[in-house]
Length: 101
Image (cartoon, rainbow, N blue to C red; front, top):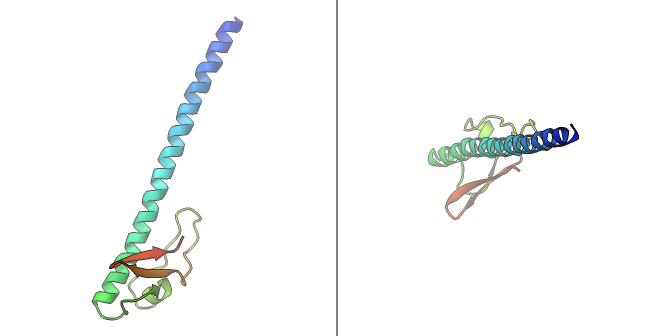
């Protein structure tokens, strides 16, 4: 009887660890993809603003893009809070990089 309980508890522990590990991995992949989506929207707004000659080609803030209509208030996927409007969008090696994390 004791052997059966030990085997069942061991099997349950193995299954639980596999399920929890998978859930953790899927959650992290989802969070990383959510960050990418938000960053791409902001960077596309910065590129459009520069293309329309309404923004300079240098560093700009998220607040500037929002005030000119090229971005909206974006929410940080991890904290569920709005990004600070003073977050910078820099141009590095010819591409824009959002520094909001």
